[in-house]
Image (cartoon, rainbow, N blue to C red; front, side, top):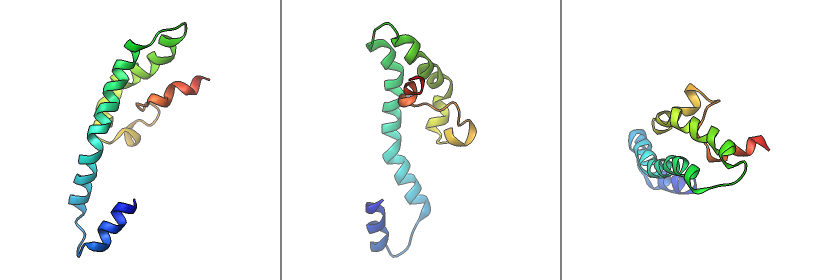
Length: 91
């Protein structure tokens, strides 16, 4: 946020399209990495409750990954978001 404010102060005019495209360009690779890790996480762990804890997260991600890439995940179906922190809701 601070970087955006200083950038806006130095600009003469604000271009919303350039700002939004720049934010997407910065955020999309990290989002793609997070989605990829969600699919891989089920393969790296083990334990008595590992699969029953991780499987709902992976299932939600397999159904809703496209909503995250389009940045509409909170607008369309906010109950089924893809989140690695979702498994903590059980405990």
